[in-house]
Image 1 (spheres, one colour):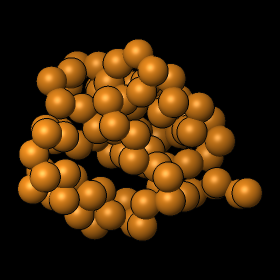
Image 2: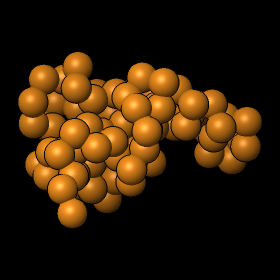
Image 3: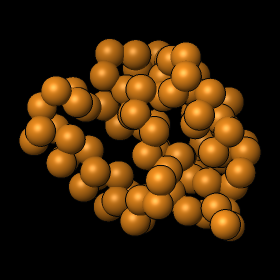
Image 4: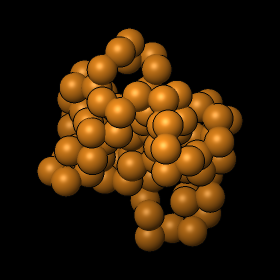
Amino acid sequence: MDLKDKVALVTGSGVRLGQAIAQKLGQLGMRVVIHYHHSEKGAKQTVKLLPGDESRHLILQADLKDVTAIKELVRKAEEESGPISV
């Protein structure tokens, strides 16, 4: 499957496993939406680790315990980056 220029929303991608997943998907050519709850600093660090221009990727904050916040996260991600594939 060709992932180039497709969009991935990776939750918790400011730290640990989420950050590693975001990096790998970026290496595969995907545009990555980096989600964080409290780790804004980590999210900013993650975007710097991704290939290509930082403007290719997006950082969004949301509390995943809040259903309304989740819906808004997806809406913003798709509005800014296009349809989410992963």
